[in-house]
Image (tube, rainbow, N blue to C red; front, side):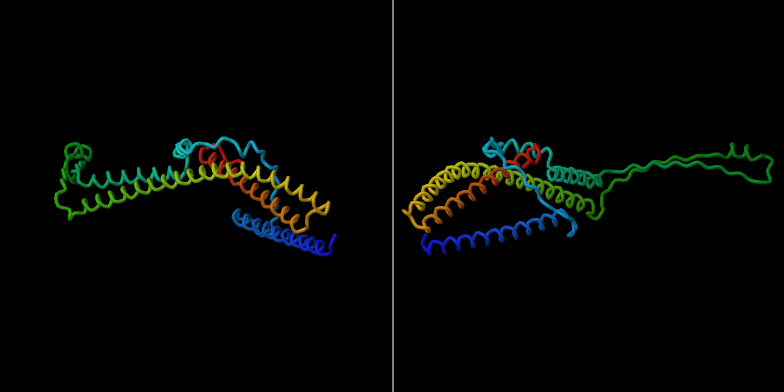
Length: 261
């Protein structure tokens, strides 16, 4: 092997070692971010387990329909329930404000007795003879209240309109999120199928290039280039695979199936 080929191989090894160190640093940073999200103490021992790689059947599984996921999400998502309660609360506030225009009826009642000392009648006799009661009823009809009732109704109606607009916006955002996950799942599932074929082609090409290099029919630069193409194809395949799995899992989550990755 020529000295130049040896030098290129040594440079490739050094580059690979640098990539390993860089990847290890990134993993440590991601673990730190995850600990912070979980609000774990900094000195707590924390490690991420290595799960088995999902099979191709999971990546190529049927993708849930957007409409079905959205309808399921409407009945269980907390943000939808919160917006619905806000609308109901605003409706009640309007009814309460309008109640200020209604007449009010008041009923009053009273009981009393009187007695005097120094008379021939005893206490109980006086109580019996002097016992009296009163009953009254009053009707109040609001006519002039300085527009306070009208202003209260208008404020309540504005709050009602705001609550309904917020509810519509919440539903739009939910549908947009689900639609985006569906599009990503379809897109990356198709890209995964294509990348699987690319990996097979680049793997075959690299095997042929390695054999030609062994026979001295090609140089080290062409071999390293073929290897780089194969690694890039594998990286793209893995990225497409797990992005498709993530979006399918998110669709299942919004549909109430549960989050399983």
